[in-house]
Image: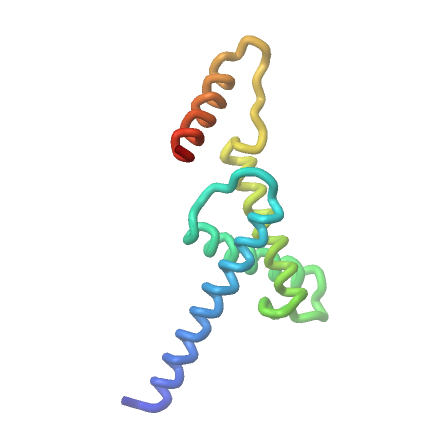
Length: 125
């Protein structure tokens, strides 16, 4: 095998594992900051962290053009956590689990809320 290929492959695997670990830590931090029950499992948390990193660091780099942000720095971690937090907030808003609007006598919203609670209680048992 070519030595350059092996070195490039090792570098790619190292970058991939670094993003997986960093994305997981960022996703867990964003979920810890957001109050309430969070959707998704380990894979969703990791992907939310990676996408949050792209959103957060990209936004900071867009508004501060003279400063380059690397994700694996303290400022990059804060920007990535902010991006993941915003991503989780928008997911909750669009999924309908953040706000529940119902008027008096609206049985549909109340029965939906009860079903969610019952399903959650059944999973805990």
